[in-house]
Length: 500
Image (cartoon, rainbow, N blue to C red; front, side):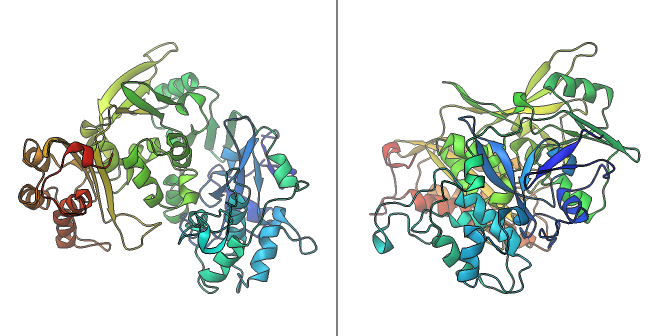
């Protein structure tokens, strides 16, 4: 336990005696770093944001903003973080802090440390470059990007009740390049900390980070009740809001075997523990359906930790990734250890057969999700529709994903994934059957839309009524059809006219 510690703002701080379930936020405040605030304790407000040193493909480091309220503090053993206190001081403000002050970007100040950390992550983003030109001629100066290349989505997980967002945006848009002698900028040229195997037991509860996948699978075989945690964007909420505790938590987000991304002629294989932000960056738009999904999945702070494996492992009917992956015809690779000895046993499961009931799946206690496989080639017509009360950083009332092939004006293949309308995510098989082999025209679409509106068993809750959910399903296919029409509103289209 004496060797377990975190580097915070350049200082090594031991974790000895800290409760096994403690979050980074609670621990930071306990040790006197009270700049980080608790606003919601479930990753929606960003008041607790901190910067985590993460590896880049070239062997350097990136400053990645994450929610301190969700990260188990023992998951940071051997890692390096920067809080608002580490950005600057009253005597020597960080450029982000300075611009926030100049623009009047803070009133009560409760949210400001989180905004400063999220803004600093974007400030140090390697590919944030000010384009040639300025003002209206700037190619990226639109509703969500500044003339300095600042992406406002970097702040999508940060909420402010009193200042208003315009001064904060103005501060973000006036940030220049980091200085050559900036210590946090200089740090990026060095490697990020490597994962450290961890075994901490306090008060009868244990937090464990195995060194390898083989060790993890043997542990699951021998301890089937162990709780697997990757980004902890779901479990962290359970700990904070519902007071959940687990006797044994096993962290897997840094296992190299779960962090691969491989593309072949037949499929794309995505490691289950890669963060959604990493997947988004590495795919770089090559899977258009996922490219539509990522900006709508919670916030950047959540995507910097959340994973495909975690979103699927919970079995939630309102997760955003299952509908998209169902439409893509994805399969899951489930891994386990043999009955004795070491090694690896794998089986592949079609995602359409993975969910068996509310938060229930075919995954056995001794198994974990190793990877997600998306078959190639991809469908030519894809779309992801998310209906929620807020445009960003909200839970779906209904999510619909489409993947269609249209040849010569006829639908030759169709996969439709649904979320939020049943006890499990599901394929809209009846609607798919109504589309395949029929012309892609308004008559077909209207008939299939009536079927789509009756798919699933939607219920009424605080997010939406059952009738509203059914109506959103009913209109989703019409919205897709409208998006595929050429400007002259032809009633049939050739495949070459369909956006890839």
